[in-house]
Image (cartoon, rainbow, N blue to C red):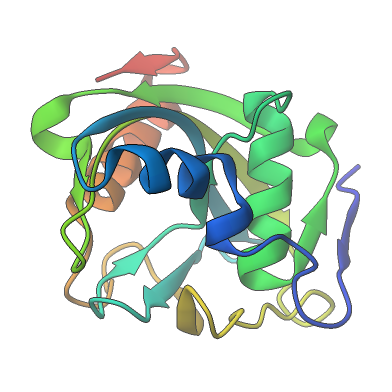
Length: 180
């Protein structure tokens, strides 16, 4: 049974400067940092995918974020999903389907010059009722969210999101955990 509920109010997460990555940035500047994290593909009961449009560069992506010290990949996925979209879920509802670690796809370059070599566990949260659970953007990292048919995705998509959606399709076709 899917245990998903709408988190009311703005995300209660910390600001970037207070995060582990924010602290590292204050010490090392924009040089590349290897960071573990999680990405969450949320599909509604109609098979549409939830995407958010980033405020910094306008690209569309799945909810994702870096692990904080002491967080598991699953806890990171739950926290980032809630902070970025207002949707809350239980770790038990997440289906791990892939690991994305290819530097050519998952090196993130931010407009301020920061570079992150991201290593993400990818999770699927499937069967969300879009009427009962209406996502909303956090207005910090994303200013828009929406449900999209897999064959009619908005542009531009982040390269990592293209890769994650491809990994999901491969997982669904083969039933095997995917690595890229």
